Amino acid sequence: MKCKKCGAKASVNMRQHKLALCKEHYLEWVPEQAERFIKKYDMFTHGDRILVAVSGGKDSLSLWDILVRLGYQVDGLYLGLGIDGGFGYSAESHRLAEQFATQHGLTLHVVDVEKEYGQPVPVLSEMSHRGQGKPCAVCGLAKRHEMNRVARDLGYDVLATGHNLDDEAAVLFGNTLHWSGDYLVRQGPVLPETPGLARKVKPLCRFYEREMTAYALLRGIEYIYEECPFAEGSTSIYYKEVLNRLENDRPGSKLTFYLRFLEARAEGLFAEQGGRAQELHACPNCGQPTTAPGLCSFCRMIEKVRGELRAS
Amino acid sequence: MKCKKCGAKASVNMRQHKLALCKEHYLEWVPEQAERFIKKYDMFTHGDRILVAVSGGKDSLSLWDILVRLGYQVDGLYLGLGIDGGFGYSAESHRLAEQFATQHGLTLHVVDVEKEYGQPVPVLSEMSHRGQGKPCAVCGLAKRHEMNRVARDLGYDVLATGHNLDDEAAVLFGNTLHWSGDYLVRQGPVLPETPGLARKVKPLCRFYEREMTAYALLRGIEYIYEECPFAEGSTSIYYKEVLNRLENDRPGSKLTFYLRFLEARAEGLFAEQGGRAQELHACPNCGQPTTAPGLCSFCRMIEKVRGELRAS
Image (cartoon, rainbow over all chains, first blue to last red; front, side):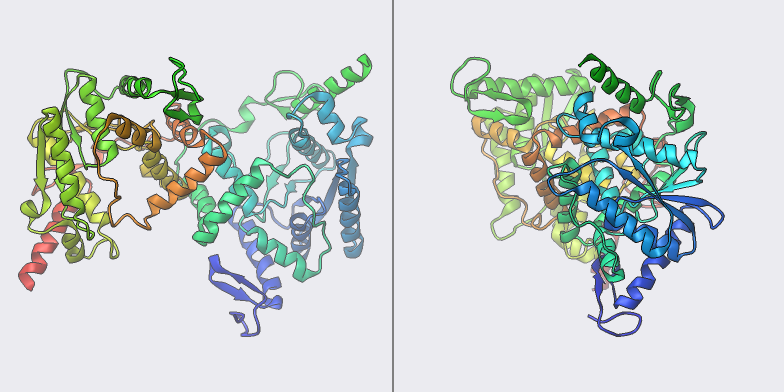
């Protein structure tokens, strides 16, 4: 297989795009594509201050790398969740995020959930009795809350996450299997800003997971290979497997599924269900917009944990 | 496993319903459920004249059997498509449809495509250059056209087909993977009547395929076991396999996928896209409503075949 641009030996072959590229041209192609998606979906401009959520994994570190290469003003945010899994998962991912920032002379903000709220995520999850034995629901809640908080407190315009096509297609697949209307009408590359919440964007949403792996490897980005120890057996991994089988049988079907969804929605497939802003009010504790009556879900969870601690 | 109703040895176990039944109670349960769906979706009443499209397969013969047992006025329609496949597929399915009608003293209308239009379906398909080497597209077109024609000409109120949950979920899955909006807004247990077209209903749409197989076997209905020889390798069979794997891993997911879709649509998930009637006009040849400019697709196909014959 030869590189389509220069004829040298190809490093990456993308069946779904009918495109093979050598290392050099692949490392050019990825940021070009990312820039195309950023413009196509009006994600941000060079005047915006961007905060990228960095987990230490291939997607978020590659995203940071790409945005820096494209000349955007972008700082990182690492959230310490306190997950060990027998191999120091959080500690190692923190180390790799710091290492990347140092190597490239970039600013990394670090928030440690245990320092802020008294307990690491797995303990918060146990003590709040959420999520049926798995901390994933509380983890998602904590990450969303802290990302929003830091973006607002530090005045960033945009919050960028490293979700790739496999992530997005798996979420869409789950929402579709259950026809979760509220999620279907909102899922996408951009969630617009609302008072108190920065715009959220996913510049990698059209890259296959294996394309991001190839990018990180070819760029020499050191990232954490291990999945979160709690991810095993998760529904999202199951949906990814189903979609991978579809993709394997019919190359491009994952991308078609996601892109046709975005197109069909843009063409007005779904009924207007009112924007996110309409039903929101500010949480009396943290000030973040919430649909819940009274405290937002995160502050309610923290309250519950503090109540448990006082009672014990 | 014991029958939930009488404690005798169960013949059929339905994991997704958490229900096991003996032969006797299963054969009661199926028509009860069918009646429930007929009422729930307002399919028809005892005053309506119903035409059931009978292929000689387990679903359509079981449907006919169930509707007769429920006391509906229901005649059959067999369409001779002229498919051989090396084992006389059409001839054998015709024989089984006739046998069922005779055994139960029922009226079966028979239309033979070759007698009506000069050529069997596979030849029509070849000569009209439709469907990329497979006659399935032309077959679907011919079946729809002839079912509609006979229902209208003979004054039936309702046209019933034997589509089961597996069929419906597979169609929905395909329409969803491609986000085919026009199909998504219309697919369902009932397609309302429009001027010149009888109402179309699918009373078996909530029964799993294996439930219908069990019904036909336990009722002693003789049906054609073979699939249509052209079905092999079809997209719909592929989607059924994908859904069967999902169902196997998570019992009930096929039913949830279909029912939640119907619910979400009824709750207004999709934007109004205008009813079917608005864009229709009568085909100047056959009089059937069509969206195509000029002749309907079927009449255009027949015209093309006749043109080819004249030219040769």
